[in-house]
Amino acid sequence: MATKIRLQRRGKKGYAFYSIVIADEKAPRDGRFIEKLGTYNPNTDPATVDLNFERALYWVNVGAQPTDTVRNILSREGVYLMKHLQGGVKKGAFDEAAAQAKFEAWKQNKESELKAIAVKGEQAKREAKKAALEAEKKVNEAIAAKVAEKKAAAAMKAAEEAAAKAAEEAAAAAAEAAPAAEEAPAAEA
Image (cartoon, rainbow, N blue to C red):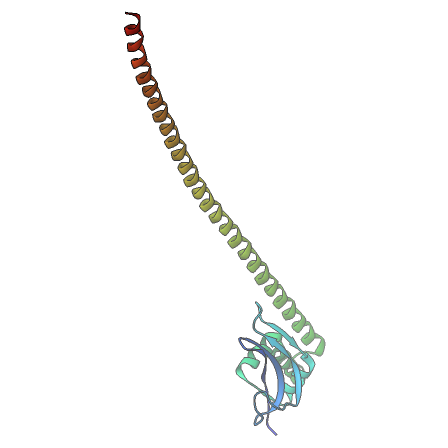
């Protein structure tokens, strides 16, 4: 029986979530499988992989053929590196302790790279948030300046209207006072 290590789709529409399984190559994609090795969630950044390392290494060693995506996942998780190191131990190039030390060094390096990527991503998010806040402040200042300009124009217009009204009232008062002043001398004569 030819076995494959492949992804089995789970999740809902538009949000794919995969199980990493061992299945007969003739079985349907989401059909019967022999063993579940783990899960793969490409929706997170970086993609989340939960893998049973020992069982994946066992299946790779006995000849199960992974699909391209699963090969990349297994390589990223170090399964193929461990297979390579075990081959070196079998050939006598180095002992088991040296192989384990090389694997642990690779694993530490990989973890530090992932942490650096995560820190860089967080820093980029903070900078983008800060830039958006600065842009919003500039927009708010421009709006406040326009509002202040409109208020000043409205106050100026109200002052002009008040001055014009006061002038009209003064002219009307002067007009009323002029006939009264003309009548007063006529009454005295």
